[in-house]
Amino acid sequence: KAGVTQTPRYLIKTRGQQVTLSCSPISGHRSVSWYQQTPGQGLQFLFEYFSETQRNKGNFPGRFSGRQFSNSRSEMNVSTLELGDSALYLCASSPTASSSYEQYFGPGTRLTVT
Amino acid sequence: GQQLNQSPQSMFIQEGEDVSMNCTSSSIFNTWLWYKQDPGEGPVLLIALYKAGELTSNGRLTAQFGITRKDSFLNISASIPSDVGIYFCAGISWGKLQFGAGTQVVVTP
Figure 1 (cartoon, each protein chain N blue to C red):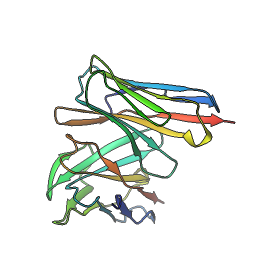
Figure 2 (tube, rainbow over the protein chains, first blue to last red):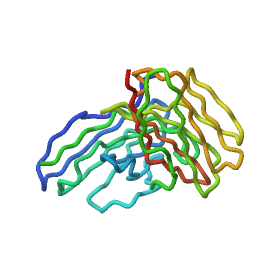
Figure 3 (cartoon, rainbow over the protein chains, first blue to last red):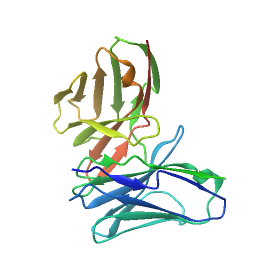
């Protein structure tokens, strides 16, 4: 069974631009969670989607948004990029809600904002 | 958010040594998970624990679900160079999933 895939793997953007990241969960998984990881900060939870509905949201500004499609694929969008948004963005999927089952992570998208 | 206390923050060990790390919390958890993250990659699930007192092994890795349900331990025996990376604990409790800050492991030959 294929694992979680994320595209693109690497991205360089300029301040003020917007970016969209994509995540395809493991086949059959309905929950997708997004995390931001920066050096020394660990995993910061962004949001979770389950059956196309946002279940939980972390403490991030409204510039960070996401959505989930009927095939469980998810996208994350960041508008008006800031230098501090440079990070590894990780997507994780689980069969049910992430709070009930272990999550499986993708390789991440490395975003660099210049 | 990260409400689990994971320690140590980092450790430098020699090849062949055993490694121990732990996570503690003031909250009770129903499930404990341990992940390993290689540089530039996403975390990979190593071990999942579902019952208080449970002891589970995966090769040279052994993890335990604390009796109080407030802590968990991960041991790596006879470390090898590819054990280098960041190890994260995660706890699932009553609808909430929380991650520790990670333990950076460096293995020297």
